[in-house]
Length: 128
Picture 1 (cartoon, rainbow, N blue to C red):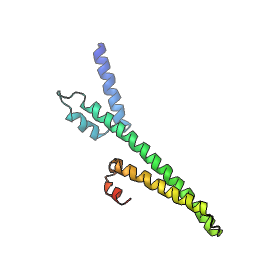
Picture 2 (cartoon, rainbow, N blue to C red):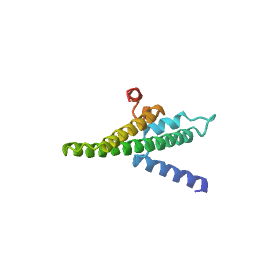
Picture 3 (spheres, rainbow, N blue to C red):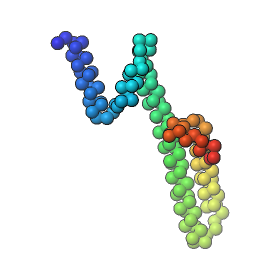
Picture 4 (cartoon, one colour):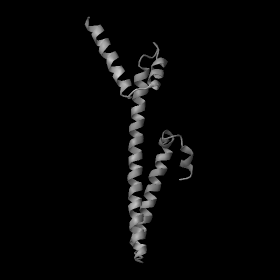
């Protein structure tokens, strides 16, 4: 077996393992079928775009979740102050500010079109 055949065999075995481990599926196979001689890097380009978009989406979701967590924490504090009948104005302002910040983050998230990637729910961006 020459070097080229050995490399081809290793590549085939590697691809099989990716399918068996569910890193790849039928969508990847369909994507490969779309590639042709005029654009031999088609699969690479699509996968690269997918990872770039995924990275941005995960980053934006993380920021939104962190903001939501901050708002939740402020609401818990605010509720505790209300239950104690402590009407500290600074606490109310801080809670309002946190709500406003998360509102801005979500608005920015939806305006960038990232929310559409997250299940096609871009119409919710208009209500935020």
